[in-house]
Image 1 (cartoon, rainbow, N blue to C red):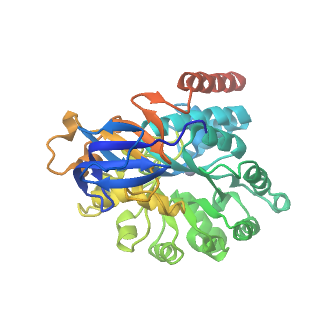
Image 2 (image 1 turned 90 degrees about the horizontal axis):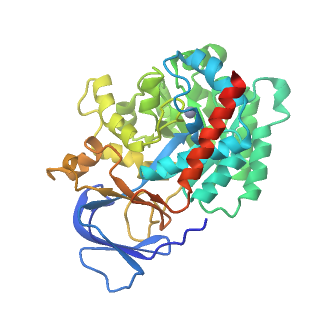
Length: 434
Ligand SMILES: [Zn+2]
């Protein structure tokens, strides 16, 4: 990471404070990677640079809790297909052609997109984890990184490539402060029970968190019940996986009983409203999750399914669709949504010193241009942040006090090279498939 940590004071800027209320005309100092001053007056301490914040708002950056970042290169490749055909006829054959450099190119493109729209950290599950780690390390964005276990038969159980691969790049990238390693089990339906148990043991031994897909589709959920006589949530809990900190993507078909399990084991559901709607998967029981005090988070899923990594779009969907799906306008408050997209995600990633604007916390921030028509009037600015923004108003993204994106410029990414190389990967694979 070549970008230095900034010593900068944001002056006369509105902030989304740690109670998720907007405070106007504030001063925020950043030094050594942390927020070292918040106040209504200018601090006496000196900073190397200043950013004038009139017409701007400083918010905690987004935490994207479920993605397959490399899949940006599959954006627009498979549209309007039922899930089975989408996967087997399009996605799997394309993925079979991927080489490590393609994954690197895809993750760099993803990092550029996430930084453009204010994401400071993401949780990822994909193959060629060392390529993902390299791109994450170079771009400076934070990542909870995992390589999914796929273990379809007993003969595969002795050789767990995902564990082996993780071991290798955990040592290669042990000094990368922005990367937290996790284990992943792709899903109940793609691994044997013994493989899940072995992965849970491996996670406990290494002190790692876990990332899984859980009850994304009705088919997956019902087939698990037929196969094991229990729901996927109960299955993973019994296999010991929930003994470690777990992020469970989707949770669309979880039942009441499953919600008790998620609560008991402090599992964080990563909701993906855009992906769930585009692939016609359904609606997660979000109101019940909130009622139970479950730590709901937000994710974009991969760009093959949701086509973009702009968290603002998922934030907006999260804030409205569950009201309609469950016929309850009070089903979710916009403050719940802001928390899901920020602090809850940070907690789920075990990053407990970030996710809010608070003195002493990490400077993982986005700055929004609020001097635009859709942000007026200023009756309730926090609600405007959820219901009225498009995402493109983000003008600055800072990770660990480093400015990585500012006014259409990237400081850790050669964006023209990244676009060119990602396009090259896709053209090569498509020509190979012909
Ligand atoms: Zn996924």
